[in-house]
Length: 303
Image (cartoon, rainbow, N blue to C red; front, side, top):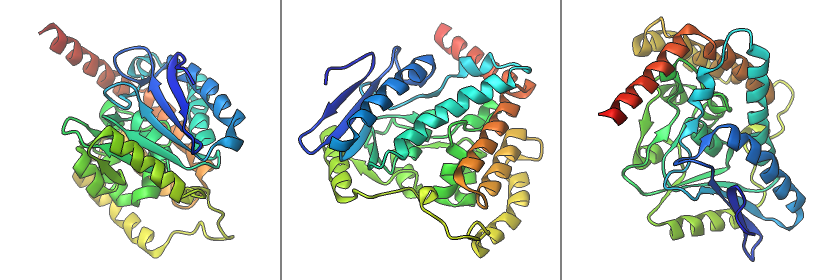
């Protein structure tokens, strides 16, 4: 199919559809354009669900996704909590529609994936990154006084385990492709775009029934913490104080949500994560940190 505003969609003879995001601007950002594109894209996929065998998400730009819309977050004010909650719950619903479509979903990461961009990758069943020394992968939200607002806390905790996940979530550390592979943030590295797409298609054909661990049925009572998680929980508080101090509200909220997500179902944890984000994004601390980021960016451009 021909490109439309915001993305291209192509289906190969095996029934594998490739989505290439190309939102207005130099980089893909989860802004108003993304929010308008996603219903159109999801409707197109769902309408042709019967003829598809898998979905590959990639970018038609040199980066995959730069992240969330910080300008939007800076406009969030106290008194707007319900509308902010509704906005980010809608964003999350797009990711849930994708990952629960019943098709293998692969992120073909042809460049940097930060914040919301990496959260989109976490919604995919497989993450393959193009070898590029400039690429950075991570969830830097805590450095802005907020937390990942599109499922990043609970998905990364489920993927890595709570302590390895918190090492990224409460520090905001971004890493290279090789470091991401070592840490479990991605599954594979490809040397060229052609190889990346071939790896993505081969994985889809080999894994037609893949599902996320959080979407598998659980037996009654299996929401209890495992002994390993109970041991990890006991070490979190002192580790947090040592790592980020005791006055980092965003880091503390992230740790609380990650811990709670271990013993409740995904969608309940997701709403708790959204509420935590709303509390943080309207705070003076978040506004000060995001404003400082914009000021530093403007100085770099001017200099």
